[in-house]
Image 1 (cartoon, rainbow, N blue to C red):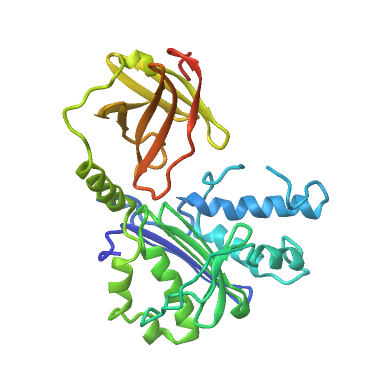
Image 2: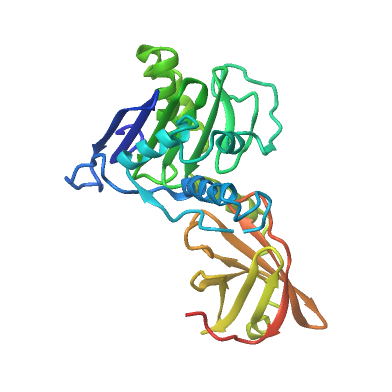
Length: 339
């Protein structure tokens, strides 16, 4: 925890249907003294998707939904603790008589629904998967010859099961995007598969996890540096800022409102609060943190003009490798503010 600058951790471990460990370590806040225990609540972030998929699977079993029905449900709303997640892991590993879901349903959820190509280049990386992809509420991959079903959360959290060995582990931390949760997950598996001496060996593992999947802020700053290298300085918008105001929409992401206030353009994406922008170049503007719960991604918004009027915009995401689809203008001028 000291090495990863994580003030508090809670861990739950289940083996052969029994709770082996449900315990907290450290403190709830940096500089604080209140200890983390097995009942301390942590935001699960994207681990919520595992619960959402299970809830939907229950409805499928009851005949109220089909597995292929269209439904964009909460993806990051649950808070939980080590004690309750130990029960959740027990349910995920239970037999057909005691499980929350039928064994057939759980096997479907814990099977590859979408496979992601894996390059065969393991080298000395023991974590490199031979197969990798998405299940239903799970990420599916292999480790040391066994299948793992896991899901991480951006709050520095992780849950995982190794069905073949009937092992389940949950790691909760209060340091967002921390790799400590993933490392501890694998270490718990290694404690059973290899023994504790090898499981807690720092020599190679720690260096790997320090370098792996750095904090997204690092990616944002690197991407911003690349964008600035090609930025055209000393340019001005071709039209008054008020000409860009209006409501834009795309089929995938819905509404984006652009307002002109106090000499600036404000961008309101869906239910997020308005995000201020600064001029980037020509008819492009830099928007800092347009999505409230994703501070690691900014936008460069470029307006497309037709006959001197903005008719669409495109978005380059700084800190993310994919652009967004084009947004087309559906109304002009300042719209009613979202409250």
